[in-house]
Length: 359
Image (cartoon, rainbow, N blue to C red; front, side, top):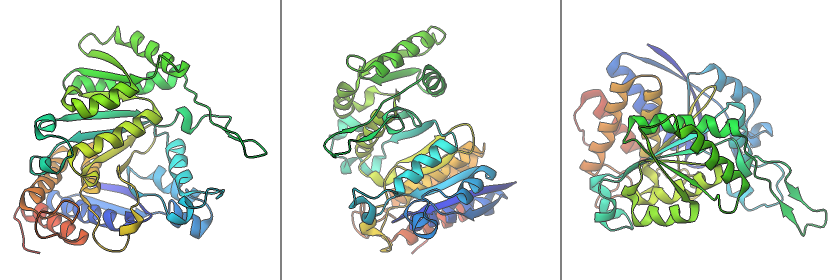
């Protein structure tokens, strides 16, 4: 089978980690008889430097004609350190979400036995923790209007807006995940303070009448943040709005012991995007030390989306084996640390031969 993959390395460590995921997908193609065509596009700071636009029209067209998007990272210090910059790399990410209709971000959080000791939490709290954060991605305070600053610069404002339709769309998806897993859904909001959160809660309560097999509980976001640390095994599927999901999923990421291990998928009405949850990590850019496993696991989610389930399983087996064998980068290494490219080569070889190799 042939598949068109839009490949957007982006900024910082993006090109290095995406390169390893491409290696892995090529190995999958060799092993299972598929052909992946990787066509590259600009996004983020690199796109601003070349075109003046963080999400150029040409990149949008590439995404629209592809069956999936493999994405690296966005962000650069020269924009982070300039609060008056009118064009920012992150605007490219928001534009991509909006133009591709990426209304849902799916972030699975899974613990790995070989890394439990790396977590800041006690092993008995996290062993067996396995949940999914379903985050609404195109509404809320990140997109609400009006927004801005007063003319004298002494006041700034942002607007949080949600429609019932937006909430119903993401809730339907969250219920589908809950039905496939342990039939438990936690809705996170701030309904005691925010009108938008009250609309969220009312809408989910209405929809829950048709979802008798799914157990639902509701948590205020501050309580949920505490419970994620105290009892992470309590959760199965978490449904929440854009900003709360952004914060909680990043908080949850440290449970596994490394931010470099968690993948994500952004799904919607057009092409879906698969990316690691970490940022561009500019301090490591070009040093060949960044952890590529989250990007490789994002490629596994990409394969799932193409109904290549056995292929996705093979990729996850390769990642688990690399962790067990200690073929990992310096952020999680116990003894020898492998480079980004060495880890990618090892994973590709494992998939191709099902045998570990020396690097």
